[in-house]
Every structure is written in C-alpha cells, then in structure tokens.
Length: 130
Image (cartoon, rainbow, N blue to C red; front, side, top):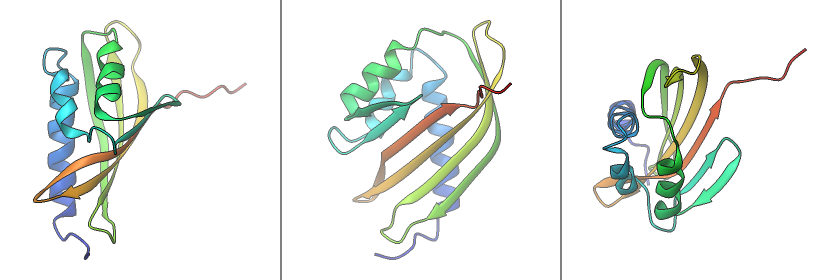
C-alpha cells in the first residue's frame, strides 16, 4: 500500500469531526461510529480500552458538560500501510476547572473508501514537579 497523499486534509477533517462530536455531550454517542468494534484501542489517562463499545462507555462516563478547547497544532503524517498518524496539541477547560494543556494522538486505518480510528491516546499535560 502507498502513502496517502491526502493525509493532511484527512487528518484535519477527522479532528474537526471528532471534537465536534466529543465536545457536545448530546452528540458524544456518535463517536462510536469512528471506532472499530474489535480493532480500536484507546489509552485515556493511562487506562487501556479496546473496542468501540468499551471506548464509548468510557467517553460517556466523563462527567463534564461544558468544554472549551483551543487547538495549538494538528500534525499529520502518512504511514506506509495507508494509515494516517495525527498528533494534536491543545488546551481545554472542562466546566469550572482551570484550563489544562493536553495532547492526543490518533492512528486512522483505511477501511474500504474510509477510515476508522484504530488508536487513540489522550493525556492531560500535568506534571508532578518540585
């Protein structure tokens, strides 16, 4: 399989769609359609999750209602198997919490004429430093 020449456009389109669904609690259940029932993996703040149903269960368990998000950078790279690697750097504020920097990394795998999110790693950038 060759490198996908549209990787930048696909990455930015995915991120726009993903965060539009994620940031609205009423639309968050729609995220299940971006993952594969068995082949998708998520690491959320160190917790390992596999499969779209369990990933959605985790995302639905998040208790915040309002989210303000600022994207600092969205970097995409093509992978040799046709997949696309996406790294997001940003800042978010949930409800009345203070804003926090975060990073999120996705791997989109080809599935016919579309893609599914095969890997998703999310971390708040909070450090224990003296």
